[in-house]
Figure 1 (cartoon, rainbow, N blue to C red):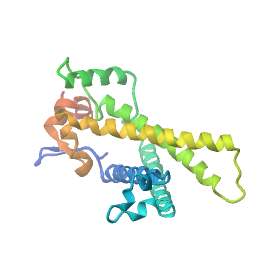
Figure 2: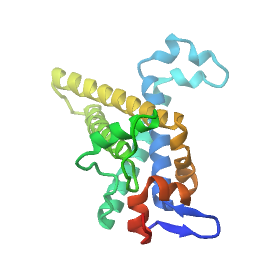
Figure 3: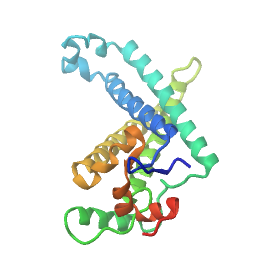
Figure 4: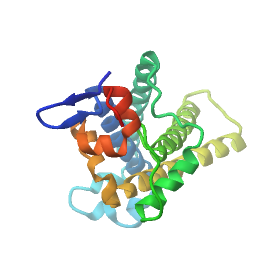
Length: 226
């Protein structure tokens, strides 16, 4: 288990290296995929982004396609590792639970000063919902992307309607992921969520914050009274 109290520094270790590494590989590869994917349209030439210093390559289809493929490979490896790693460890803290929608509403209302937050586990209810939303969208993106790659192989001839629907599905999944990322990042507009930020860089967050806001996890992981 990655969690432990770091007594001298008064921090709690929330994530191990594996979680941090996978998070950043997924984050960076996703942003690269979005950027290179838009380069296939071709938006960058139309809006003259390729005329900016050092960006002449963004309108070169062969370059953006190669970047897209490499980023896709990195994403798929990270996702596969993530699923196997947490599956073997039977670590399912991020999966949604009954009542998460109601609790998410309570958390959001509490942030605006209406009512009180429910007691939280290691992850907030809204984080669990965001995880499954982005994760499901990512699986659709990967599945449709693989089919699009197969379509380009020699002697592969999918029906025109099928190829169109796969492209639409791929684009739709991209939009869902962009929306998910925006909502995910928007959560850090609120000061109450700021103490969670160091965790994704160092794996550690403030012990007092954990005890106050994540009392269920604190009690379970460290045997402390709530």
